[in-house]
Length: 281
Length: 64
Image 1 (cartoon, rainbow over the protein chains, first blue to last red):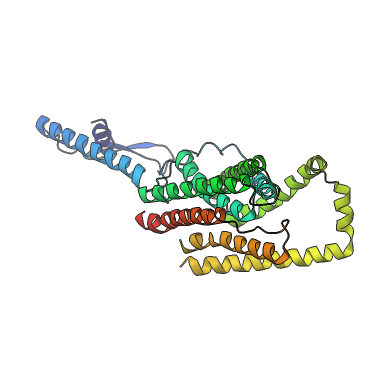
Image 2: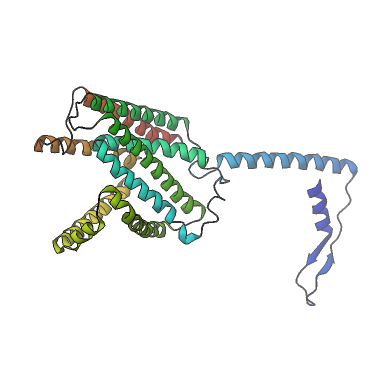
């Protein structure tokens, strides 16, 4: 009704903002024939019905129309609004650093193959749960079945590997306690990895941060944060930064590292790009 | 889907390399050995995980 009245008013008078004198002038338009009381009641009922249907459609759209199962109204829009754009890449960079550190530390306690299995499985399960809880992404029932099977696999791998260690079959001197520390580190690295992925996704989807710029700035922030943290933490782990600096100053080491690192990054990059190009079809 | 499924084969490659290193060098410091029946159980569990990953990326992706 209110909408109808407003429409009626706007039909009868309107303001023309552009005129020769530069002043707002009322322009009178011809009035339509006044509707009867019955016609008014009918149109009111119709408009209420139309409004109701439109609202229902809008609500349905908010639930079903989405990008990769995401609701149209973001739950996380306000949580990153106060971070300046140039500081945004520092957030995933920090979590990436923690993730890498925990991953490397876990390899001291757990066999590489088991660590790989647990990492790939835990990252999938945790990322599905996080994206459902934090971003409200819709997950299909079939996908939940897949996640349940992966969870079962993770539990079985963890239990059987711990049994192997407990039986003393691995012969590498590691104890059950060390094994548990390793598994906890893997869990921690998976959580950090999921937070990193979530923040990257948020910044790219909700603030339209260019992906290449995000990756580049994330790398730069990563180096800076790692260097800052290295000097106070390295002595606690029994490493002397000055020894590392002197070994790096050796010409042979520098040349070997430079060639090896460049080759590794180039080959990995080429394979990665080629794999994406082939499998994304 | 294909890439996400095949990416998990990296684990298998790491395991095979670990076994080769262990039996080639004979050192417990390098690689990892194959233990019976423990390693078979871990392989079976890994199989369960791979099935889950296949369902998630294969059938789950088609259902959306």
